Image (cartoon, rainbow, N blue to C red; front, side, top):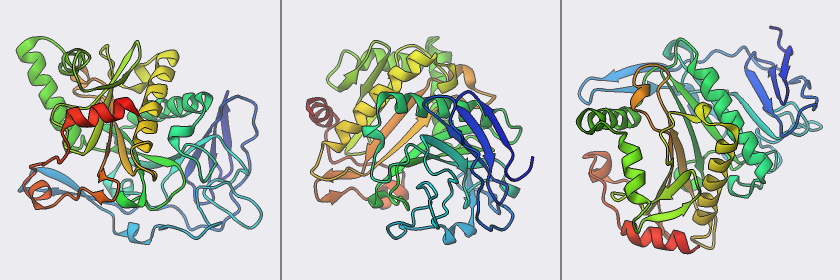
Length: 349
């Protein structure tokens, strides 16, 4: 495919950037022209990440030294995630967009490491947020996430598709524009690997889905934050962070592509509701991390149950929880906020 070749289907358009990377436009409605070429002069795309293995802890480690040069807190008017206009040539060639996903220019994966990293922008509005997206845009983001999960999960060099968002400088987000990322790992990362192992043990011992049982129990308890017919948002009993919420289907669903469109829209609405509650915690935008745990691309799918996890290190209006030695060195989390208190406050907001 040439650098500016276009493939389109309904409200999905795939284009190539100047260095050969793929960018995919997901629109709220079909019929929009997304064929604008990337006018930048960029060197060929050549990811240089390495995958190494820590034999003492039994975990994979990605080494991507080229990421030291990635864009960090750009000056006003120079955001690489805003649409291109005039002499401002960004990662998005179009002069406007709804949702876009493109290969990360400074990836942690790809090349010798295998896999792929994508950046997914929720809106062209630089000052917007996921929590304030209208329903039609939430539906488009959900469709984009499901599309990318299915597409990336079909690659031979991908074992796990991890969808996530870092919001706020306090947790290390390098760009303020509303966006998330998708890491298509060539292995199953440690946290989802442990979650899958726990689910497999539970099924072997009890014959039921672990998260189905957890959701059923939490639905009648004091840690519920919000709910819909098909989904529950709750603070986990053993929350690691000051404010931490899981959003999960009541029925066993392995991943986002497995949800019907109407159910996926319902999930996106509840997810955005939780993010609005996080933003109402303080008189400033709450920094947070959000991630989606889904079924692996191949092995272990039978034990998986889709869920989103949202958490913040902001323990008071002016204090952050830092992961010190007990957490990073020992893996022993200490939470300063009672989970039931956190749930009550989020429920009331």
